[in-house]
Image (cartoon, rainbow, N blue to C red; front, side, top):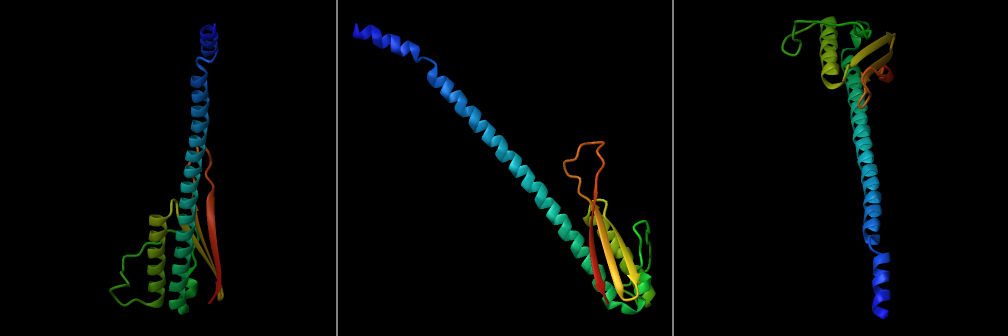
Length: 159
Protein backbone atom coordinates (compact mmCIF):
# COMPACT_ATOMS: atom_id res chain seq x y z
CA UNK A 1 0.00 0.00 0.00
CA UNK A 2 2.87 2.29 0.62
CA UNK A 3 3.89 1.99 -2.98
CA UNK A 4 0.45 3.04 -4.28
CA UNK A 5 0.35 6.17 -2.11
CA UNK A 6 3.78 7.21 -3.41
CA UNK A 7 2.58 6.96 -6.98
CA UNK A 8 -0.45 9.14 -6.16
CA UNK A 9 1.84 11.80 -4.64
CA UNK A 10 4.12 11.77 -7.67
CA UNK A 11 1.17 12.14 -10.05
CA UNK A 12 -0.27 15.06 -8.07
CA UNK A 13 3.06 16.96 -8.35
CA UNK A 14 3.77 16.18 -12.00
CA UNK A 15 4.28 19.37 -14.04
CA UNK A 16 4.94 21.49 -10.96
CA UNK A 17 8.65 21.94 -11.81
CA UNK A 18 7.72 23.02 -15.33
CA UNK A 19 5.37 25.72 -14.01
CA UNK A 20 8.07 26.96 -11.58
CA UNK A 21 10.55 27.12 -14.43
CA UNK A 22 8.13 29.05 -16.68
CA UNK A 23 7.39 31.59 -13.93
CA UNK A 24 11.11 31.98 -13.30
CA UNK A 25 11.81 32.53 -17.01
CA UNK A 26 9.01 35.11 -17.19
CA UNK A 27 10.48 37.04 -14.24
CA UNK A 28 13.96 36.84 -15.80
CA UNK A 29 12.58 38.08 -19.15
CA UNK A 30 10.88 41.06 -17.54
CA UNK A 31 14.12 41.90 -15.71
CA UNK A 32 16.17 41.68 -18.90
CA UNK A 33 13.71 43.94 -20.74
CA UNK A 34 14.03 46.46 -17.92
CA UNK A 35 17.81 46.34 -18.14
CA UNK A 36 17.68 46.83 -21.93
CA UNK A 37 15.41 49.85 -21.46
CA UNK A 38 17.81 51.34 -18.91
CA UNK A 39 20.74 50.79 -21.27
CA UNK A 40 18.87 52.50 -24.11
CA UNK A 41 18.07 55.47 -21.85
CA UNK A 42 21.72 55.72 -20.76
CA UNK A 43 22.92 55.83 -24.37
CA UNK A 44 20.38 58.55 -25.23
CA UNK A 45 21.37 60.67 -22.23
CA UNK A 46 25.05 60.20 -23.03
CA UNK A 47 24.45 61.45 -26.58
CA UNK A 48 22.51 64.46 -25.30
CA UNK A 49 25.34 65.32 -22.90
CA UNK A 50 27.82 65.04 -25.76
CA UNK A 51 25.77 67.45 -27.90
CA UNK A 52 25.51 69.94 -25.02
CA UNK A 53 29.27 69.72 -24.59
CA UNK A 54 29.86 70.33 -28.29
CA UNK A 55 27.50 73.32 -28.30
CA UNK A 56 29.23 74.86 -25.29
CA UNK A 57 32.65 74.28 -26.82
CA UNK A 58 31.59 75.91 -30.11
CA UNK A 59 30.11 78.93 -28.32
CA UNK A 60 33.31 79.36 -26.30
CA UNK A 61 35.48 79.02 -29.41
CA UNK A 62 33.73 81.88 -31.21
CA UNK A 63 33.89 83.94 -28.01
CA UNK A 64 37.67 83.48 -27.95
CA UNK A 65 37.88 84.45 -31.62
CA UNK A 66 35.96 87.61 -30.79
CA UNK A 67 38.30 88.41 -27.92
CA UNK A 68 41.28 88.01 -30.23
CA UNK A 69 39.70 90.38 -32.76
CA UNK A 70 38.25 92.86 -30.27
CA UNK A 71 38.24 95.89 -32.56
CA UNK A 72 35.71 94.34 -34.92
CA UNK A 73 33.12 93.17 -32.38
CA UNK A 74 30.16 94.66 -34.26
CA UNK A 75 31.13 92.64 -37.35
CA UNK A 76 30.40 89.44 -35.41
CA UNK A 77 26.66 90.15 -35.05
CA UNK A 78 24.77 87.19 -36.51
CA UNK A 79 21.22 85.87 -36.47
CA UNK A 80 20.13 82.26 -36.84
CA UNK A 81 18.92 82.83 -40.39
CA UNK A 82 22.13 84.51 -41.63
CA UNK A 83 24.31 82.38 -43.87
CA UNK A 84 27.79 83.77 -44.28
CA UNK A 85 30.01 82.90 -47.23
CA UNK A 86 33.59 83.98 -47.80
CA UNK A 87 36.23 82.87 -50.26
CA UNK A 88 39.39 84.41 -48.76
CA UNK A 89 41.33 82.09 -46.44
CA UNK A 90 42.53 84.22 -43.52
CA UNK A 91 44.64 81.40 -42.09
CA UNK A 92 47.15 81.70 -44.96
CA UNK A 93 46.92 85.38 -45.90
CA UNK A 94 46.64 88.79 -44.26
CA UNK A 95 43.14 89.95 -43.57
CA UNK A 96 41.68 93.12 -42.15
CA UNK A 97 39.78 92.95 -38.84
CA UNK A 98 36.43 92.90 -40.65
CA UNK A 99 37.60 90.18 -43.03
CA UNK A 100 38.86 88.14 -40.07
CA UNK A 101 35.47 88.51 -38.35
CA UNK A 102 33.69 87.27 -41.48
CA UNK A 103 36.20 84.40 -41.81
CA UNK A 104 35.60 83.45 -38.16
CA UNK A 105 31.82 83.42 -38.67
CA UNK A 106 32.05 81.27 -41.80
CA UNK A 107 34.30 78.76 -40.00
CA UNK A 108 32.02 78.78 -36.94
CA UNK A 109 28.88 78.15 -39.01
CA UNK A 110 30.63 75.28 -40.78
CA UNK A 111 31.58 73.76 -37.42
CA UNK A 112 28.02 74.14 -36.12
CA UNK A 113 26.61 72.39 -39.18
CA UNK A 114 29.20 69.60 -39.02
CA UNK A 115 29.12 68.82 -35.29
CA UNK A 116 25.49 69.42 -34.26
CA UNK A 117 22.27 68.10 -35.81
CA UNK A 118 20.55 71.15 -37.32
CA UNK A 119 23.16 73.29 -35.55
CA UNK A 120 22.79 77.05 -35.85
CA UNK A 121 24.18 80.02 -33.98
CA UNK A 122 23.32 83.58 -33.10
CA UNK A 123 25.54 86.34 -31.78
CA UNK A 124 24.14 89.53 -30.25
CA UNK A 125 26.64 92.35 -29.72
CA UNK A 126 25.54 95.19 -27.44
CA UNK A 127 28.62 97.33 -26.83
CA UNK A 128 30.95 95.11 -24.83
CA UNK A 129 28.19 92.68 -23.85
CA UNK A 130 28.08 89.56 -25.98
CA UNK A 131 25.34 86.91 -26.04
CA UNK A 132 26.14 83.78 -28.00
CA UNK A 133 23.34 81.26 -28.56
CA UNK A 134 23.74 77.83 -30.12
CA UNK A 135 20.76 75.65 -30.88
CA UNK A 136 20.51 72.08 -32.10
CA UNK A 137 18.01 69.29 -32.52
CA UNK A 138 18.14 66.40 -30.07
CA UNK A 139 15.24 64.29 -31.32
CA UNK A 140 16.78 60.86 -30.83
CA UNK A 141 14.01 58.36 -30.56
CA UNK A 142 11.13 60.67 -31.43
CA UNK A 143 8.41 59.25 -33.62
CA UNK A 144 8.00 60.31 -37.23
CA UNK A 145 5.63 63.22 -37.64
CA UNK A 146 6.28 64.31 -34.06
CA UNK A 147 7.49 67.90 -33.74
CA UNK A 148 11.10 68.04 -32.61
CA UNK A 149 12.21 70.54 -30.02
CA UNK A 150 15.38 72.54 -30.54
CA UNK A 151 17.69 72.82 -27.56
CA UNK A 152 19.51 76.10 -26.97
CA UNK A 153 22.75 76.80 -25.14
CA UNK A 154 23.50 80.42 -24.34
CA UNK A 155 26.69 82.11 -23.14
CA UNK A 156 26.83 85.72 -21.94
CA UNK A 157 30.10 87.59 -21.60
CA UNK A 158 31.55 91.04 -21.39
CA UNK A 159 34.59 91.86 -23.48
